[in-house]
Image (cartoon, rainbow, N blue to C red; front, side, top):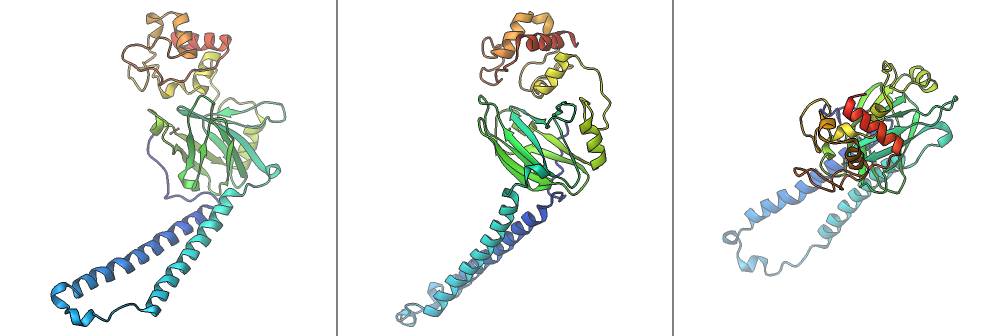
Length: 312
Ligand code: CUA
């Protein structure tokens, strides 16, 4: 998994320019205001140092009404400017387009992977994917949630300048309209445990006709990707984000134990329990409470264990 972030150097959503404008106005007003306090302060501290001032020169200094009004009004006016740009760009981000004119995609964030579920297409097929595919220049609404036994995450796309918390048991939403074709990073922006910094995904912005053709199909992989026949267990393994924490082809330890050769060490019942009730019997080198319990049917768990132990 690549960890290089294609980020703020690209502006790709319709509202990205508004967000950047609000940021830079904030930035420069803060710089100018900061300097207008610090520079005179240093200058006066030096100019009116004790050895330079006689008591009789300053005995009648009280206040200066004009000066005090001016240094109250100017920051107040600047504050209004900050508020205006902050509020107007926030409003664009927070006002959802009509759902009838948008693609509504459900997002689930859980330790430590993202899943996207599309609306059913005409033939009733529901696309699910770890990476998001969207057409260029269309409104997309993300309805996001996390499982009840999970923690708070945040769906952050630097190139789109958008970010919103993903909360267990609640549905939060955000929207975008991507102007540029390309692939953009999705990051988790709320600390959520061991693999937080690897809770990454991608948004692929593709031409509309390519998207439509893919959406109409029943392809189990992304547009333009070759469908490889996968066993049910393999599919479950990918959909549940197992590879985020367990390596399967090498001995390396990510968060939990490597699954390479695990079938020789444990029987099927032990492995099933380890998926459904992970804290039941944790190997000595690892801690309880890290792996979330997976709520899978008996049939699914059997298929998953089959894949983990035999690779099929
Ligand atoms: Cu999910 Cu940090």
